[in-house]
Image (cartoon, rainbow, N blue to C red):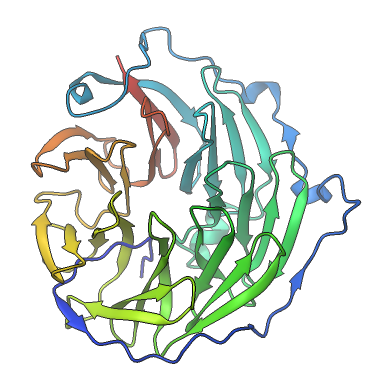
Length: 382
């Protein structure tokens, strides 16, 4: 069964009564020695071969305009970043929008420089597309980038090896979750890292001390989404067993503050986002027989206030434009929606292919999305 980044749609509020957070997890973090100046061989940033340098298309003139509701109609492809047999599940941009970072389920992390689109292998692949398919390893995220762009955190393997690097490839910390990590998130202030997976707990690491500070335990498991609220005072966790629920945890006390759901049968949470003002959730699920897939849940009233009809059927991932006016979703196509009206304003489809990750650059001038088995496409205003 396919598992993907999560988002949910909600209509019924459940009172939360899970156990309080255990202050210290059973796992132990490893603090790097102060004298370490470079990453181990498998984590050393290294330039790509000459063939990895890709020339931009000469047929598109980019004006570096912001992508918004007025300009979206003039969106045009800037670049095809060819990655045969890839399964890119994470796309992130550095704060200056000059560097794009992609993460693959096989553990590979690539760094792309804007305009030239030359790639550098930051972390090499640890498996192959065929190996992952045979093992039933699907979609879960493996990469997180701090909002200030100073740290890349990567998780890989059945034992949940989690490693933080600075942008030079220097190892900042290592940690074993002891189970494959399905979701990670870094708080807006860059101080906290949350990680989770199959078990019923979420481990919180302090990124200043590299020590675990909380272990959020509940009666539910199969965690595929971790999302900090924009102000960082709430951590959202989605669970899929034994039933689908979303829990909100206070990041100051690590106490559970709310539990709710919108379904009576089990579904997959593909992706969930807080709206930029933190008052609502946008959720993507795979509700069988439901062609909508993406809905907006109001936290104050505990009800769905908007649907995105004809969304790309159980969107795998969603992303807001920097100004919050647009919502992008990917699955059978990249679709862009006007958040105010709910109207679809742009659709980009690669025939016979699925799309798995999407991100806007922080300056709002680029949107990038992955095409499974092919690579990443980058688009901008023509």
